[in-house]
Length: 147
Image (cartoon, rainbow, N blue to C red; front, side, top):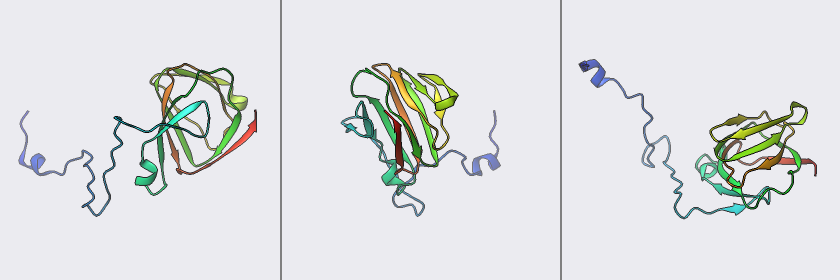
């Protein structure tokens, strides 16, 4: 297919990498090699902060979550006070209960959006369950409702 001169001169629609010298922002890369994992909100999970909270001045949190230990009982029923929460399953599976909405089984490749302050609890998960979670804002309150 021939490319016209106009097409050659048209601005690219591809996202351009950010560079600290650009007036609109900076580039942040979170390398997998040597990544730091720590326990956090839930003691049965390990969290890898991807550095997005710092890069966005607290507007967005992105983290990878995986089991720190096998699932031996359901987690607590809780809500999160935030504006947005999304989970994408990288590996494994989990069963999550959403108050009166019932349970959902999440499997590799599934994406979950849950509305703010929805009651939920992780009921069960596979040993290799691994997700990316994105929240807005990065710092939010979790309210435990029942053990």
